[in-house]
Image 1 (tube, rainbow, N blue to C red):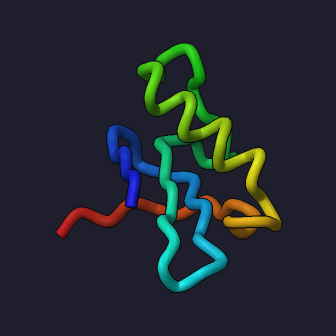
Image 2 (image 1 turned 90 degrees about the vertical axis):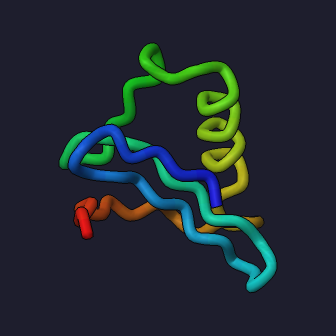
Length: 68
């Protein structure tokens, strides 16, 4: 799983297959991500996940990050 947890919320793209990878990105409570604040690899992963909605990943969901 690709995971970024620098904020209090994350935008998660869940894999549609059991063997696939989920993608998660820091976002605000509305699901907006800071593209300018992402590194190149993270930005490419985000754009890939958006392009694969319905094919490899489900529509994204905003989740609260809980610290354990």
